[in-house]
Amino acid sequence: MIQSRSKSFSGIIPRARQRGVALLMVLFAFALASILATAILSRQNLFLKKTAVILQQSQAQEYATAVEQFARQILYRDYEEDKRNNEFTDDLKEYWAGNSLIIPFGNAILESQIDDLQARLNLNDIVNNDGTANQFVIKRFKNLFELLEIKELTVEKIQDWIDPDSEAVNGDGGEDNLYLIKDPGYRTANADFQDISELKLVDGVTAEIYQKLLPHVTVLPRGMGGVNINTCSKEVLQSLPPKALDESRVDELVEERSKEPIKKAQEFLALPAWAGSGIQDKEVRVNSEFFQVSTRVTLGDRVSRLVSVFQRDKNGKLTLMSRNFGQKYIITKQSFSLPE
Image: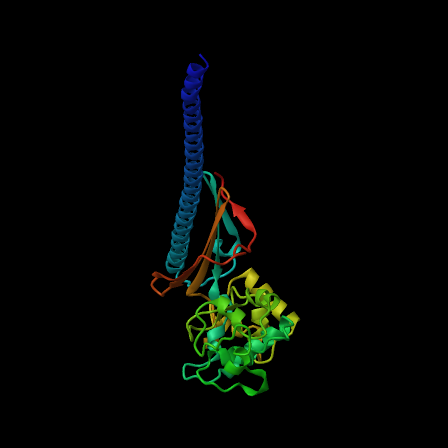
């Protein structure tokens, strides 16, 4: 009897162990499947979020380019009005110049403003086409720097950044040897500025100085004509003559143009406040060719920015010169909102 019980228990124990091992295998497989399912769901959710962000950003950029086209039409309509009136002028009273525009559009907010780039001093005009210094323009920039109380940056350093030679302009300039010792080192461009942000690379340009200069300077092809006296800032207007005008005379000029836009450069130069300034009519203008369209689109938690530069020729044809999606703080004018 004892022997038969021993035999029966010996058959039961291995089967119990087998069931335990099988249960552990099932639990392990279930845990592994759960981990894999969780990982797949997590990656899928991440992929969906990335896709949503990409789609939202793409939609915001499409809105920005649509606003750019809207601004193109505004500038062309301005040309048509000038043509109809036979007065080709651009001034601060025109509808495109005064305010930034806010357009609610579904779940997006579209903001845009148009700026006259020929209301600013062109950095590339510091150097002539033959590589020599344009002393008259250099004097303008020195006047502007003095008015803006900029002391750390010299015009000669900007000149050396552009001119083709490797010799520094007296003790105030700076060529490659000044920049190669920086960390990291780099060389001067020895070529025209391609974008206003390049000014940040010039020795002496701090963030504060850059922001001071930004409303008053621009980057355009060299020799594109004078400054628009109807739209330029008070500081630019004051810096135009070889000897900067005193503030009271500039206030008179600003007052004159606010009453009635200047129709011809000769009229402006004939004003008593401008007498003896030494400016020739070819150095100033009353209309503009180059315009900057700044657009900011807010869509959900995404913000897309676009800065576009247009050239408008004498026949009203508008050519897109450049696009920049990387600039911040581009809407600077007081806003005007359209109803939904």
